[in-house]
Length: 170
Image (tube, rainbow, N blue to C red; front, side):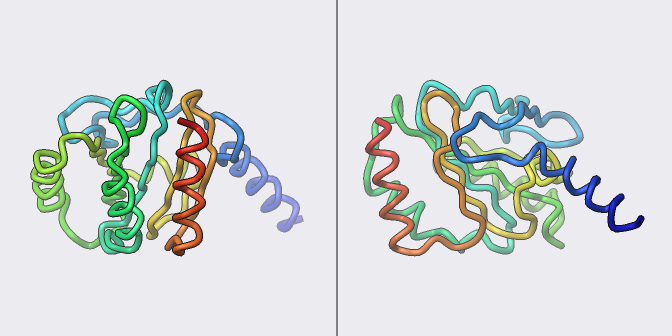
């Protein structure tokens, strides 16, 4: 009986999981849950009209996919066609939020074309079943459909695949 109950709970949890080829469930992060570093609410419905690369990162793993971010920066895609979002899972670290928020504000000034978002309550882990305590990569096309996802470090081959997907969808 316990196994049946656990299976049902897991099944319902997976209903909100993001799937390649689909627009993910609508999510808003605001108030006590976080939001944009600039103070606005972050709304997943904004993932349309451009290609978006979303990095969902545990601060302790911030450099895990640095090679991908450097590759994207070097490509210098037009900002009206390709943009990036750095969403930080503040609950995934022992570092105090006040320190992280200060760092994120300085990063936002240093990289004004990247949207920095704070997730203070693991909203994305719960709503989209993203992997906690990791570096997750999500790529969306102009219609807001997920075209690529990877939880963990991307290899050189996977970076080439991401670049090819971006260029195919431009």
